[in-house]
Length: 125
Image (cartoon, rainbow, N blue to C red; front, side, top):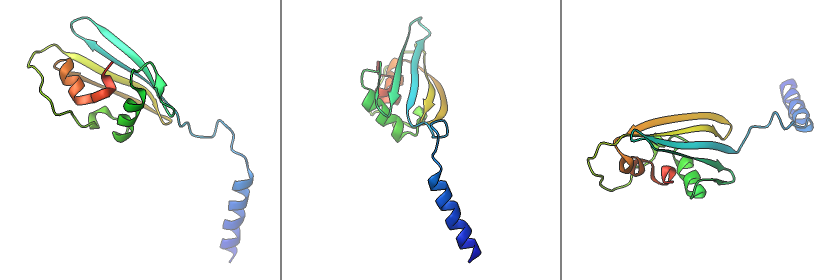
């Protein structure tokens, strides 16, 4: 009986104490997506999610892809298409904050076609 009273009192007190803005978990996501080719060119865009925005040409689709993959581009399902066997390495990188947690990822692909096949809309900029 005493345990139920203490549990009830704790629930009432926790509901009565306002949560400060600093204590609330961040829900927005802010990422920088880049790719750099060994051939000498590089590009980058900012992507925000919750709400979708930034410089990415298709922010809503990119955010949806990251949501399905748990913010891990390695978990994206590759497209069903062929690429030329031409070796021109390109490294894709993702860094920033995803729903309040820090995320980083990088992978080097044989060429830009392989990168786009593996990452879909995410690195299509």
